Image (cartoon, rainbow, N blue to C red; front, top):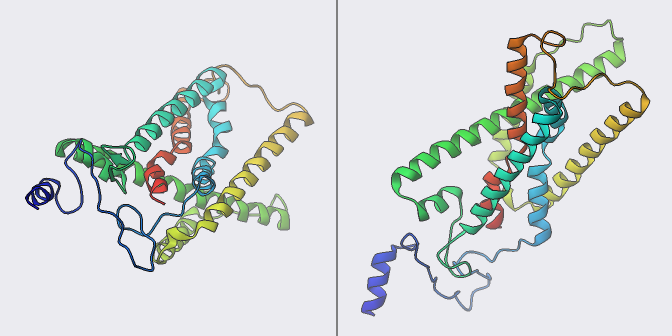
Length: 275
């Protein structure tokens, strides 16, 4: 009894000391709800559902801009940058997967969020620093999705206008309106209870991701085999020919941002593991 009280005092009410294994109490018996080792409802995630979540995050809207980004950076810097970001994502994702449980990989305390994992291993100043970077990353990604969604919706509207009224028609649209509509829709869905339990939504999103990525590849191949597609260089767009120096720098940074945006799924990896 004394030993149990001492361990409870050291571990706190819910977790373990940083770096030590946490051994939760056995699941309650006799209840109607099947619980996991942490007392929560037993997780039903499988390899297929986890893969659907990851595919949805990886093959997101950012993938569609990778061809443009490579064209801006060139055939040397472009692929090297893609491989560099892929290596960083692979490393950070493996690190996060290992940090899901504190201490023992099978029986250690579960970390339900990114900040829980950081707090289990690092000191308070380091937790604050990682938290700032994480939330800046989340805000930046949210802004990127908002801009991408609004521009895409505006482009569809403009294409339909040109198709209906001809190329000479005035089909200008305001992206701001689509951003507001997108934000309102996001606020609405964020209030839906247990929205994260809609497993079929991730399956649908994964199918959609494969679909529009396949359409993009098909259109690119069709354009390639149809005839001349323009000159591509090892250094991307040429200063003095395609753009000036200021535009070259701006487009290069924009291309780097698009590539970083396409590798953003590691921020939700721990959340996927908790399902």
